[in-house]
Length: 224
Image 1 (tube, rainbow, N blue to C red):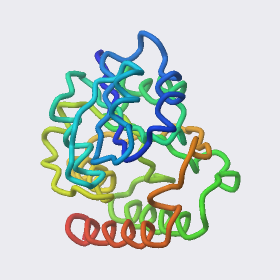
Image 2 (cartoon, rainbow, N blue to C red; image 1 turned 90 degrees about the vertical axis):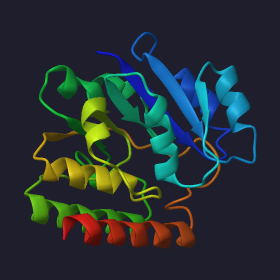
Image 3 (tube, helix red, strand yellow; image 1 turned 45 degrees about the vertical axis):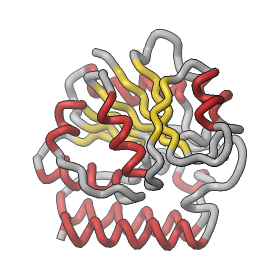
Image 4 (tube, rainbow, N blue to C red; image 1 turned 180 degrees about the vertical axis):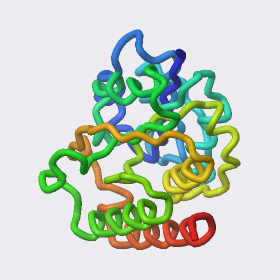
């Protein structure tokens, strides 16, 4: 099973060297960093670290993920943030249900084991829980998190016809996978403080409001 790791990155030059150094040797067929219009030297740093750099100047998390998907060669695509908050060393755990043919989409859950120990701002925690409960109610799922650290079969992702190009991309992926009655499995993952800089979602009020707004739009469009 070939695996492509897709890392959307916007001004993450200070985080990427350490993050990419943690990727387990020999496990990933293709490591890609999608430069989403950075104004720092994100692309140069990623290329120096050995990653394939994809340029996507249109700002938006979904645009970056779609750009990586378009050139990915793996049978399985893994999406991971570029700030160091998720551990590449846990990739084997994330991939295990796919290897065993027990899942089509695997979500790395920050909340599954010790939710009170997760260093997440209260407003971000509340929004995450709200949308998790909506999805569980609507589709009978047993999820605890909507985390962006995830692995999906490439063949499935290409059939989802993804349309959301902002922060709603991860939510759209879950909804459309559930509507197709594919297997969604959670595994516990570590959630660390970002290596440097400030979160573009939970770190600012503007980012949190924008993300919540896009989540509502995606929920209304697809889930309800």
